[in-house]
Image 1 (tube, chains in turn blue, orange):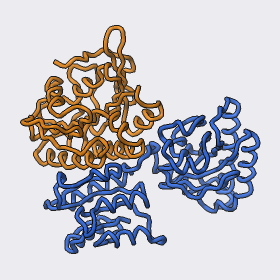
Image 2 (tube, helix red, strand yellow):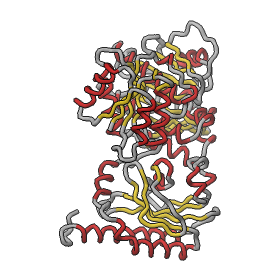
Image 3 (cartoon, each protein chain N blue to C red):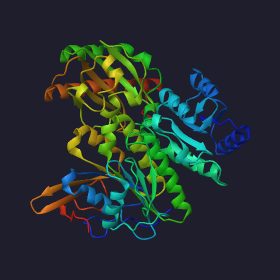
Length: 296
Length: 217
């Protein structure tokens, strides 16, 4: 869904129609408060993009961009505005990052559709790198996202074994979807769904090998990450959950509240545990499928 | 839009496909900054946008000319995070409040790029000199989003991006994360015989270290 914000109802309607004609689902708002209501709606569709005017009653489009970055950080944000770029005061919004497109040219809405098409296809406003074949990866993930609760017991056994085996605080098995990581099993730690840009696994899944971060607090990617700190993660290691066709859909990770090392044998064992978890997911997928035939 | 690849006259680099972005990693004394500017010098029908984070626009403009960039206001722009009065530069100078204003830098890029396109400029080379300053004024996560967004825009307009970074100022994982947004990476080092570069991740480039001239004319 694209949220379109403009206090000028004629311009708003024109932008809405252009985006709808291009095939997008569009929700409109004339004020910052209306825009916030859309963002705060727990039953609303996933926000893919924000298109907003700059001058709004009681604030600016950059206030809306900041709110979007908190609610749906991966969303593509575009200021689509009559205000010249040199008159836009970005000083207090330097870290939100948004694209800029002038609204008053004849082909402005055509240009907007081009920018959105490109930005959404390549998801290029995320704060983290994507795997080379993210679309194929998400397709693969879909095949395993059935009823993960059915696997609770077997995966819980694996995370419990992992904590005892490595003498660590906690272990977890998580899947990484387009925007979030959600956990199928946690032992020694309790974690809900986390934005992808805020999880260590987002970066770890890009590694071919087992990832070990001996001192998470000393890693520039996570030194200001409040969630990681609140969860007491000072040591992190993970092995990827890789489908039979080679797509990484998640991780088997272990944590400790103090930095530590992780030797070659421990890395091997963690990789074995990840393979075992993936096997459980694969078997479940086949059971849920067409009677055990390999439909991969 | 653009048909041909970007070439690099006088440098030991093969042509690079339109839409590519390169992380250019080298310390200040390695010649990496000069290499960045020389990579931005293209044919007369191309445009150039340089983001300066730590040198005044006037000094940068002089360095650009000595690197072989022909400066003209309708196809050369400097996005200036430093400030100061530098009158009568042969480029469109766009001031930004400072190197922490990633949003302001990105928006000015989009705006000036569009105006170059409308003026018939075919292919724009964009340089960030340097990411290290942006990282010293901001956190890695917003800088990552900024780089990803800019790389995406450069790709969509068939441009060329050169992102200069001093690897000695950052840990390996920061450099590795930033390089993952880019098409490829060029490392610069000081060897006994002088400055050398080596490209990785870009098609058709030599895998060996190659000497280049790190001085401006």
